Image (cartoon, rainbow, N blue to C red; front, side, top):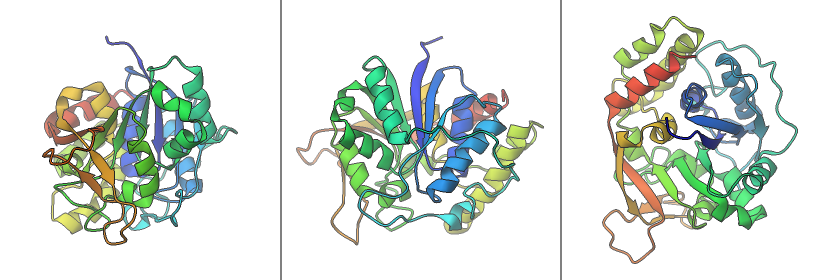
Length: 313
């Protein structure tokens, strides 16, 4: 087996974040140094509580969870209760967590961890707005060359946006943070809507989770039943896109994904296209290539991996 990879999951759970965290917790490939919560799908008080709930559901109570930024760097917080429900994890009836948040602020934890671990050994896995990561880079610029890579869910190009015609939700919520991260000279792998919209939670796939007969399998099915109704109505598909688990799946089985190195720039000035990820797919500018942008996924292989791993919890 390959060496265990040290990761920090930065997240705003969210049903699809929950499935991504479960996938990571179920996978021996990872040493999860911590989970850092950020405001996004719902406010920070809920995203941090939801991260605790997921760790308890998985039986991984020794996982360290940190609360981070409660709002974007410069803009007013936009949330997505219409997609995720008022708790952010609507669907299953998950008990109130008995685990407690760590006292340290998530941004301090990210900085201290990256300064304390060997350079080039820690991967950041942002599943929500990039506020915590940007704040860490602003507070301690020396962490940038120490990060092995950042594998993030965010953006869109050929697929357009999902919260405005131009912008994907995570980038739209804090475009200035995304701009900081993409300009930091860190290796970035980006999972945009172009990939995640090909990973659909069809009825057959959700049934695989339900038929596991475990607490995790049942809760996952209930999360997806709730989560997919919004996108099914919007896109007319069987199932909704399972965005965030693509990040974790890539770290386990990168061969499930394909894409190319591109320049990605974030629009931070125009209200019309605020948060748009301008991806130079065809190499028409001379801007430096700063991200490996994924465009395709082996969706059957992805759901096979997800089912096999979640069955372990």
